[in-house]
Amino acid sequence: LGAVVVTRSHELNPQDVANTLWAVAALPLRDEVLLQATCKRASTLMRSLKAQEFASSLWAMASLSVVDDKVLEPFTVRTSYIIHECRPLSLANAAWALARLKACSPTAMRALASAASAKAEHFDAQALANCMWGFAT
Image (cartoon, rainbow, N blue to C red; front, side, top):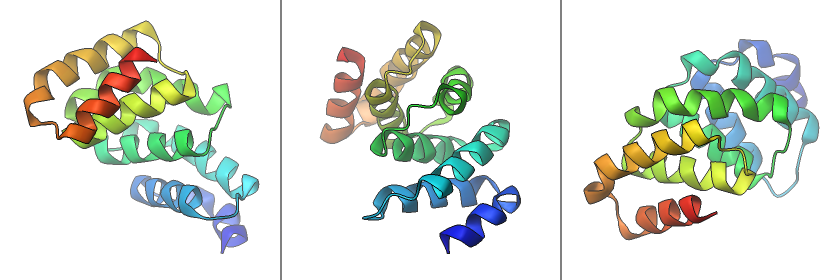
């Protein structure tokens, strides 16, 4: 399946990208070619990703320890624009992911902090802990 997804990665829509990245992160074997093709597609679709798709993709890349600046930079830039649309768990996952990847610019961190402060009362204990960990890292 991975080889077919790679050859047809240009057909992936934003939800397909988020789902594929999540699946790659959950698989016991790492498929670098599939990961790179899907990350590249995520970068080209950046402005089309909804908040949940954005956070899920970012979480998957952090879980896989993606370190490619060409892939991460569009996510870091987009954070400031989309993070206020995230639900509490997505916001916490994005904060955790950016911290784990060490890919958070000061502008993105300010946007994360503002969004987290506005939604903190809606966070469950794990989301609070993940956000705190993200800000401390």
